[in-house]
Length: 303
Ligand SMILES: Nc1ncnc2c1ncn2[C@@H]1O[C@H](COP(=O)(O)OP(=O)(O)OP(=O)(O)O)[C@@H](O)[C@H]1O
Image (cartoon, rainbow, N blue to C red):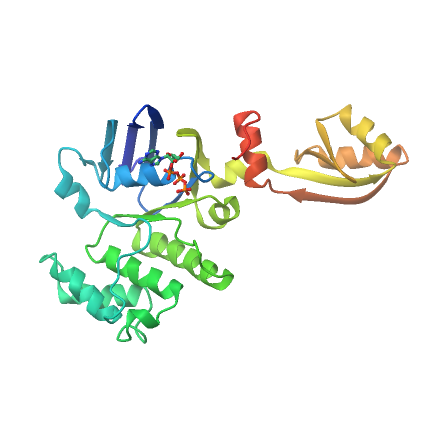
């Protein structure tokens, strides 16, 4: 990509006591993209994010936000950053608007006009003068994002933004995050332990496991290469031995699973039918996070 990165993480490392929690990770994020940070619980997502936003000090490595080093130019770097790590800090007894006013007062460079803009962006106009204590979790998340956007950041970091939301809230949050990236040209980094979540929301993804990045790629490329075909065919033993001659096959109860190879699927199907096998079902399947990890780590299970 020719644009300069909104966030650049280089050889970032965190050791706590004798434990290597983050083992030297690197990745770059660009304007206008939604970047997923995917890994099972305990993989090191929150620790990484806490280092990026300056809440904890890296043991070594660098973090550049908009080209500015957070270690040497912290104030400048933070101007380009908005984030929600863990729960947004909001005062439940104040209204949404009063919360925003409170946070805006801490930064004299934020004009009143910006408060109206962020309320508009998060589409909360009709509830903004209600007390936050009466908001749903989804609304509190939105207000938290409005607050994170007050300073007009170029990079927005959200740690597990859909945690605790109901299915409708999750969908709304996903759409909202995509909207921010597309319309506002924001770079948004979201962490998640759910592949399905990342798959629907993100352009690219970094996969973290046990403190190391095992892959950074476009979601499309990653999923295309992991896609599988599920076959239900009778007799199953005959189908299995025929498919084994042309590709790798695994068996899962009454199903056979092969790689998805677009150029070959038709041939494999014809081969089975010609040999007298009845193909009862044939469908593509995207991997679950568990399968993806097994594949990428060569056998490591999610703990
Ligand atoms: N202060 C600490 N002292 C010791 N170990 C820690 C500390 N903070 C984190 N860890 C360990 O580092 C690992 C990574 O934790 P982290 O919270 O970053 O993972 P995560 O991917 O965000 O998972 P989760 O979604 O469960 O928070 C875990 O094994 C955790 O127990």
